Image: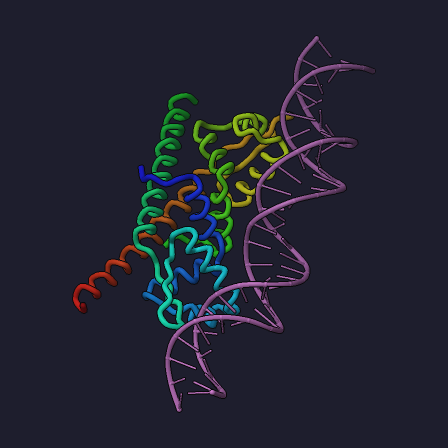
Length: 109
Length: 109
DNA sequence: AGAACACTTTACCATTTGGTTAAGTATACC
DNA sequence: GGTATACTTAACCAAATGGTAAAGTGTTCT
């Protein structure tokens, strides 16, 4: 099981619970993008994008870096992998226990 | 790719973004539980539990049924599987694209 | 019938969220 | 130096969230 605090999970799932933020993540799959490039495609103002980026950065999914007057945003592979592993482990655990339950129900009608 | 609306994903991730709700999900792995049995372990009042159950039910993760004066809560395997598949597909897509990116970066230093 | 039980509903509260506009700051260009 | 660019900050707003206490409703037990 991946080490990951409850608080990390809160932030991670919350970050992914908004469609605009998931869109930003999708946009960043192409690679690094300037903060200003993320607003127009989603009809958001720059301050709105900044808040979403802050949430994503707080969750560890995204990192940003300022070069000159431009703030570049990119996905953080490590954190993505942590998220992926936690999700896989958890859903597998759910599935296992649910299968055990359904097996039990079959054997005890 | 699993069919799953953006709105479904909002609800799903949001439902999982609270530690009390994840605890309720974990508690339900043992099987069906009465609503009242979910409050004491987490130091919540009954109305608080009801709100969390409503969020989980709205996301499709949990279903409830009233028998007599007791409301029983249980995990909904179908929805769990949908969630699991979506998460696996999405994280795989992320991983694929990130691997393509790192391969590109290796070949173009 | 009457009491006990297990929710349900209502009303209320502080905080957070997601968004805006407008003014401010730092960098790049002519 | 002065101007355009690209964020940043501040102030504000409506709605949602997570929680409570208290009163109400429907079942079950004696």
